Length: 316
Image (cartoon, rainbow, N blue to C red):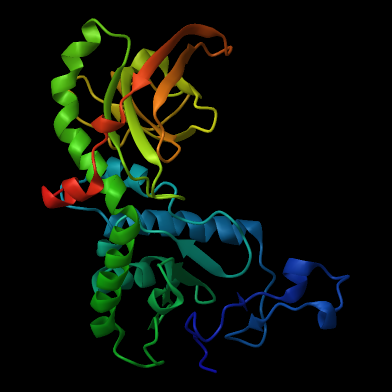
C-alpha cells in the first residue's frame, strides 16, 4: 500500500502504536483494529502532542479559511468547533462549515503551517461519503478515488462541488428557512412592544430526522435567555437551533454563548413539532431556577405553514 493511504484504502489507525490506544496488557492478536505506519519506529502519542496540532490547525483555518468580509475574530468564532477534540491516532479531523473554502491554496496553507513541522500527522477533512473524503499529508493529498500520485488539484474542485450538492439536499430546507427569516424578522420587532413573544413562521420541513416534522420559529426578548421559552405541549416537541438577533433585527452570526457574555437584543428560537400537528401549543417562560414564570396556550394553524417547495420556487 502507498505510504499515504486514502480513506478508501485504509480506514483504521494511522501512525500510532497499538499499546498507545489499548494499553500494554492487551494481546495484539485480540485487537481487531488495523494499523498503518508511514515509518517503522513511532514515538508514543501524547495528549500534549495532540493539543499542539489541534491549536495549530485552528490557527491555520483562521488564517487560510477566512471568507470575504470576515474579520480575524469572526473567523476564530466561525472555526471554534471545527477541529476534532478526541485523540485516537495521528489524524486531526476537521469539519468545514463552508466546504467551498477547500481550494488547493487552502490545502497548501495547512500543509505549510501545520504538517510541515509535524510529518507524522495528517488532516482528515470530513465529507459526505467515503468517495469525497480529503486527507492532507505533509507532502501529498489524497482526494476520494484519485490514485496515489494523481492530479489532486484538478480533482479537488469536482469533489468540493459534489459535497456541496449533497449537503444542499440535506441542509437546503434549513438554509431556506433562515434566508426567509432574515428578511422577515426586522419588520416583526415592533410587534414585541405589545406581545411577550412572536411566532415568526412555521415550515413544513426539518432537515434532521423525519423531514415531515414542522419547524416553528419564535422571537422573544434576549433578556429571557435562549432557553427562556419552551414548548411543553405537544409533549414530543423538540428543541432546535437558536439565533442571536441584534436590535435592528439582523442576525448576530458570531455571537458566542458564555456566562460573561451579554444577552443579545432578541432570541430567535426553533422548536420542532411532530408531522401533521394541529391544535394547541403550550409554552412556558422559565427562570434560571427553573421556575415557571408564565404559561400560554396558543392555537397552531396548519394552514399558516410555509412549504419548502414554495421557498424553492421563490428562489430562496
